[in-house]
Image 1 (tube, protein in one colour):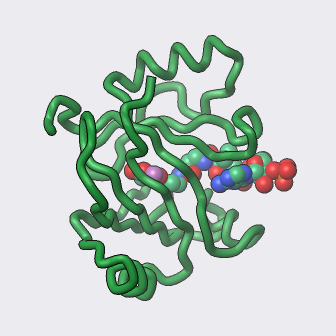
Image 2: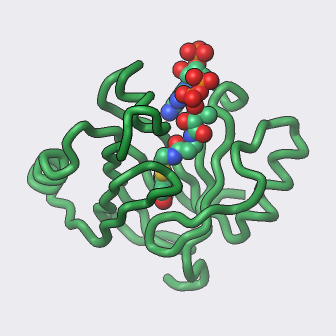
Length: 143
Ligand code: V0V
Ligand code: CO
């Protein structure tokens, strides 16, 4: 079902500061940045490696407001791992498969994600407390 870990999302109070920390500590390069109003985040993707169907990344996330998903997470739990995202070939098909197992889908249809991916979230309470994201890369047949 999953081809690779696409990214680990990290909730940050200060995106620029965490970009410096991760790029210096782990020698990673920022390959994309975006403000995603729908998701309430300003984010940066740091490339780790390439895998089946696309790359894998660290995604650094700064909230656009306190009442956004990442803003609420920071208030409740502080900085740290916010979600794990798995690469899939067909996000709509995977949503249907997982939804049929009784896991709540937080999105009725795929949304726009980083680097023109299509994304959907699963409820953390239904998968062991881990906020889970499904990612269909813009071109899953690349690499
Ligand atoms: C909340 N909970 C979490 C969690 N956030 N558990 C694990 N990981 C997280 N990140 C827990 C929370 O502690 C509660 O548990 C319970 O879930 C329900 O919380 P709630 O107060 O009812 O709900 P909210 O309002 O905090 O919302 C939580 C959810 C929300 C997960 C429903 O954050 C959501 O819809 N997230 C999906 C969208 C998102 O996260 N976008 C930002 C990334 P207790 O305390 O009751 O036990 S955008 C992104 O990744 C992009 C653009 C990309 O990859 O391209
Ligand atoms: Co993400």
